[in-house]
Length: 71
Image (tube, rainbow, N blue to C red; front, side):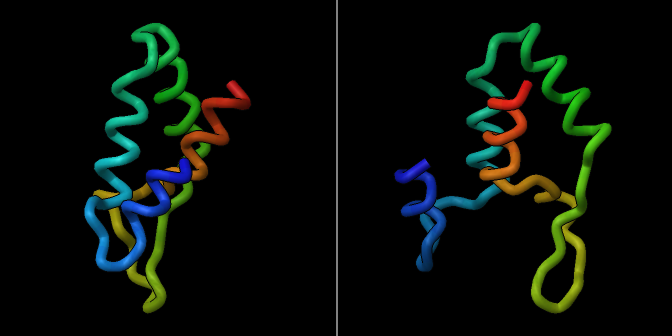
């Protein structure tokens, strides 16, 4: 998480969406299926400062990691 946060600081080396995809990709396939189901049930739409939604980046990395720990 420390490295991920450093990569997200401006000027960002990567995007949140890419880090979320990498994190989910390393999970066990069975766990990944259960995890994706859990996230889709509890989906919260990410919005920017101007209240615009970001469909392609709907999950925050911190939220994803916390949900994986809970599951």
